[in-house]
Amino acid sequence: MSDGLRILSIGAHPADIFDQSGGAMAHHTARGDWVGCVVLTHGARVHDKVISDDMFHAEEVPDGDTLKQMMAERSDVKAEEVKSACRALGVEDVWFMGADDAVLLPDRPIVRQLASLLRELKPDIILTHFPDEGGGTWNPHAVAGRIVMLAMGLAGSVDPGDRHPPHQVAQVFYWGCGGASLPRNVWDARGGYYNDVFIDITDVVEKKLAALDALVSQGYGGAYARKRIETSDGAFGSAAHVAYAEGFISLNAETHYYFPVSSYALERARRSDHENIEKVSYKYEA
Image (tube, rainbow, N blue to C red; front, side, top):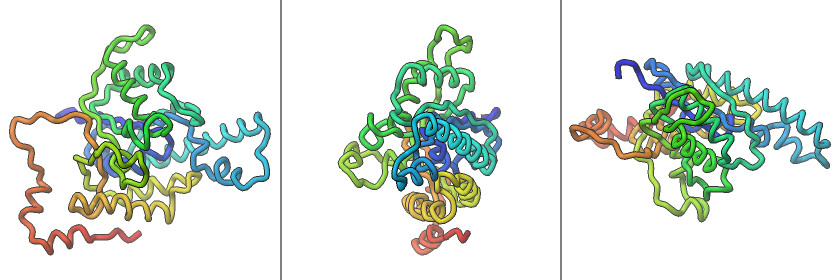
């Protein structure tokens, strides 16, 4: 496309957009596509060093007003970390919707708010959580995916008070790390979903690590980031026959005029078995 793609990554929590699709985002910003991010919740309750770690070991938590103030401060810290992580990937535009992550629900206000944003930004592609991840309704990632789907439907029509015309999204790619993860509970065992799209991120692993390293309050930097790259992106890479990859589940089947065979499939078919093993065996040394 001569004008480039418009890609919007929408996560439930501040770190989600980076550990799930940071590499793909880095590729598209480098190519000149527009990439934006939306964080649905303030995320102060999730993996935060003060709220979810220090408070866990305290004899009692502060009173309600004090705790609310602390959570607001931690939300600001997380927002600044998100901006730093975006810069590491070349992403300039990020929106914080500020929903409380205590009990995230696909209610009317947040759906309308996101739908209005979709009409304004007009993304071609959305990257987000699988709407059935981890059992559905009680999993905030799954709820975020459902909020996105409801907002997409609403964005395709008019809404009183919003002057932006309707907008249709061309394709959705759900994050496969949650939607087609290694089965480890009864909810993961259902559905039989699988990643049908892999993005080779071998050349941008350093950028993705820099983004994760920015998420200090979440504990995602340092050793965790490197462990995650090897175990998750490395596992996806093995499945995709490259060193590191991100996996995605596409919402809609694509229509083509000719059979779509990727350059990766053709190149792999022309390499020997040992040459393919060597390609997958590359390891990033941080």
